[in-house]
Image (cartoon, rainbow, N blue to C red):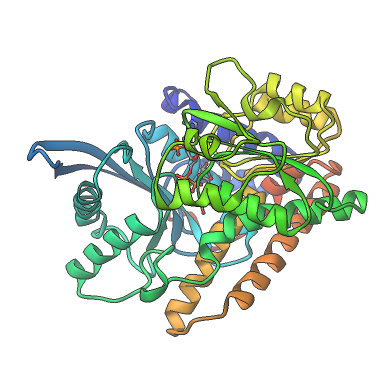
Length: 438
Ligand code: NDP
């Protein structure tokens, strides 16, 4: 722990996983003999680099770029790139560590990695975004490849940024390969990748409700946070499954719309105009817009049946959890990575609320990215229905893997432990089989 003392988010993620793995380690002495735990918490490789670019005023700007290649035991490193001013090594290491287990849970052959930069895309022109992405890729290209490391999008990285990075990679390497996922449909992207994480969260939640209570989304009210890629498509799928999503948020404020979020309006504001949510309320009489203030419950203060945090880490704390519980929430599934604090998770579990942790509930994005890799390798395109039905099957499978693992170790209903254990077992097995060369 002392080696990484400054890495708060990373330590938070590791301590949650290691706690779940205690019974597994106790039952399998080989894990200790072969140093599996000590090895799995140490990234195989960390790359940190300077990203300099020229802004619209002709001024040189310098940002810091990262790629953490965490674990390649079961496949090439795979995980998104995040562009946000809060990015630092701790954040990227926490995300990369989580990614190992998430990728394993998908049952597809992908290892764990994550990257990004402290570059802030807000307020930047299209040309500035392009110049940044090209500079970022000029260094990153040396370390990635279709069979080595395949990055994707995350906060601040969507189809536009992936396009600029892909173009630069191709130019540097003179190679048209599936080195990034989340690509546009005209140059190797997969149908349903845009929707995959949000849809996947709902497929997971639906299976969790069905399997444990014989229930579904039908007729339920849903609180969603965020207004980005994950949130928008979680809202879309919740509607398709018969529920009513009533909230969303961005970094400046939140919307409560008791008549149900107007999805077309939300997409127009966030995907087309790239504007603030205050514009949503201005165009929609039934909605309330509130500026974000510290210490307020935001989207978590309303009476809902299901909560889907889809914005960022540590956005739902113990007090928020208690408020949701008092208002009768029955299921929570994490669309974002580690959005609930450890105290919030404990409160949900103590109250008997069904809780789907991020590495299981939001694995649909990376699963579909792996399907994009398959399509790129065979140089074919699958239909939307084909990809979507595979995604649904994968999410249902993930729920049952978590459920089964929780039962195997006497922790029935604890899907946090179940996800950690189920994700860990395959990676640990592969690491032991491959020897202790690293
Ligand atoms: P986007 O950039 O598309 O959207 C992020 C949303 O969260 C925006 O509404 C943003 O507000 C808000 N947000 C970001 N940071 C903060 C913050 N510090 N405080 C408050 N609000 C914030 O990202 P994604 O939807 O892709 O990602 C959301 C989460 O889902 C992340 O945790 C990501 O790691 C996770 N995830 C994403 C996957 C994917 O396929 N995209 C896959 C698996 C997990 P604003 O618009 O103001 O910036």
